[in-house]
Length: 228
Image (cartoon, rainbow, N blue to C red; front, side, top):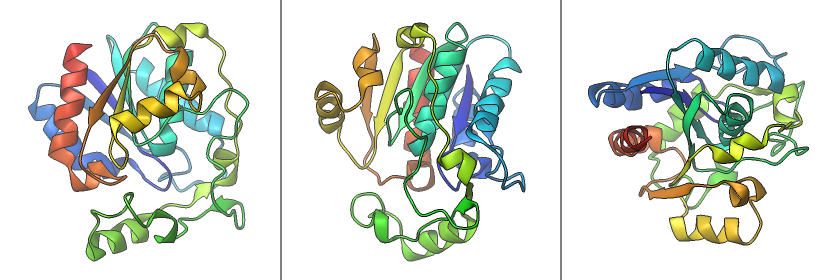
């Protein structure tokens, strides 16, 4: 199956390298994406530009697709389900949940000079970054790409109720499946509360399992793609 891999804030497509290699060995066709404004040299990209890039990647391959979103990009994966429900076999969400209609995409940290730079490791101390050693932290921070303001503060627009028919897998790194289910049942994730099929997979990692547990993450994604 075609597996689109969409990284979260500050990441480009190269972060998926080890996962993509494993997925290919397991018989799938990985497509790591570098989003506009997060690796193409542009600081003027908008959220709509990123959505269009994901949709163009979906449209460029034959057959049905599983779109994988990490962290903030869980919303991009869900927007793909909204725009292309007939093409998506499944959405996999790693370490995050989709925002609702009318919410900002990822207005989480300070914007300076039109971009939202990586804020350092302070906000991620604890379970998020517990499995990152000092060298990996340095490498990730050095490679982090400031996210354009018009991406981070872009407003999410969801339109097609057929998105709720697309099966969802929530991959749980720094939180447990039980905690994810509790959030959904408490009404904190309205989009997934309305989804018809939501499954969960646990992975013992921090917030960046594509970096710290790529083989295990690839096996989880391959099993999800196979089931779809």
